[in-house]
Image 1 (cartoon, one colour):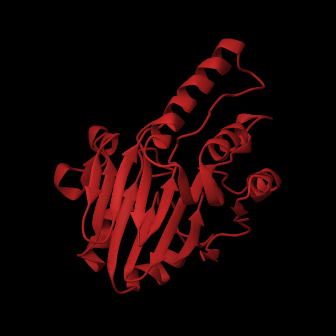
Image 2 (image 1 turned 135 degrees about the vertical axis):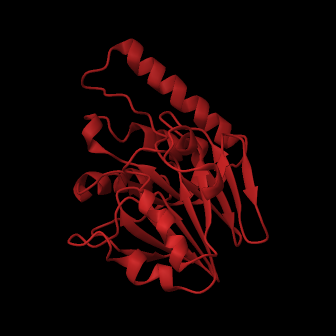
Length: 242
């Protein structure tokens, strides 16, 4: 199995005869939005293809993905229901999930977990691997400007969602989770709380845009918790998941 970093919170999982693309925003080329690992490679792969979107925000959902069906009529689109609510797609263009909903077929199981922002997060079972993509689930406090009450609320809301995930799994093989320095000095708090509570074999930072240094700053803490840290250095980077 292979994990491909596309851009921002966009990833692809390549498994045997199955490809899963999550939260596509832009392709991996910095010069041409229609060039990169998705358009030049993944869309041409044989096997099943699933395209997931955790919520309607434009840095997680790009309507261009719906045009891929012209090239790949076999694509299964699995979206958060807020994408339908915000009229970014129509009812017949995807399967829509709310927190607690499950999509399952002979190849994959996708359970919608919660978020502390819009939409959902994804708990995915694929070929004996348990995979988590957080979407915009994070402890989104802004420590430099938040009041103590705001901090307590952010902590409480986030840890309630973590508890919900813990009730479904005690361990994850690969987690993709926001590590976004734009929220202030304690921006890694949510990622720390996540891996302290849910045993995580491999961790990939996301939602950092071009701030690779900020995303990768989580490496020492992750490794101290026994995680394999997938340090991302460029768009289109791939990691073998042993």
